[in-house]
Length: 357
Image (cartoon, rainbow, N blue to C red; front, side):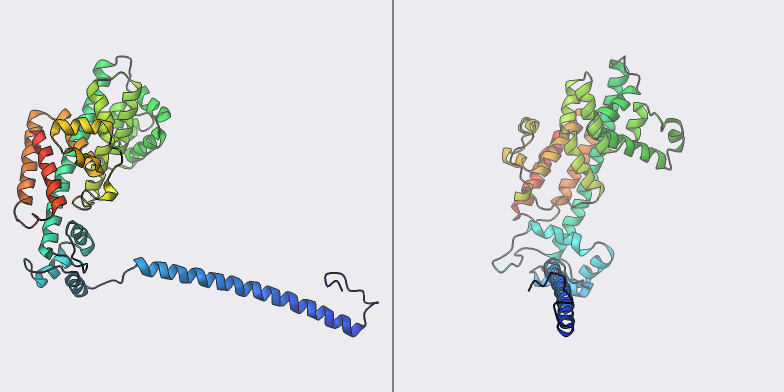
């Protein structure tokens, strides 16, 4: 019998027909129920898989007391800072997640515990890193200002056919991401509480001197690259254009308080191929060749090199002295002499600071 065909009431007794119809309905109901159960089962499997994955990376929130116990279990000592002082630090000065980042500079023994790490070392490195970020951010601000001066001087004095407006619109329409950077700059101009008068006058069609006054570092980088590719320029500006994007990495890290003294010379930071310009610059500055294959060093070399190009004698001397104070601060204790990557990084930083002088 073909169960899918229409039941002919005249060919089957009424009782049998009734049984068959109910059987078909029951079969359909059981099929729907089975599908529903299967769907529920699949959802439960997905939820279980998610919970398993979540448990592998989600950690239980710890109180300050529990954090101290956890820190001690990792082999971190409290010889240079008492546990009570450590608790006070965690409650008022810094938070564990940021401090814990600096532990990556220290080696572990075969049992996975730190060999030479006191809690005071973490707080000390956090303080040094804060000063380092402030110093590097100052260099970035110097570079940002100096590049704007060079661009405006070039446009004003050496490109007589530039009216100051067309270059901005050319950048907007012709540069990669130019439109996005233009819109972000105008949005910033309109929303800035301190630039209301400037916004009222120039937000519809900003001249280059207004555009550069309000553009972000990322936008300045894109504009400089476009300008150097599409207008007659000097060797200095072209050199700056090729390296400015690496300064942007440092600027963003410093502005957002991202730790610098972590993952130093790590495999994850290593480049298969460094930027072409970096090798020659590093050789002139005496940075060891093998160190120039790491992203942080590429960024730092670019920053110090551009700063040297744009700095006045007084500015260079000032930042050199600030840098020397930072190096002396690092050498206040002899706690890090066994940490090779940390020492190597600070040695390279010292060379770069000397280059400013």
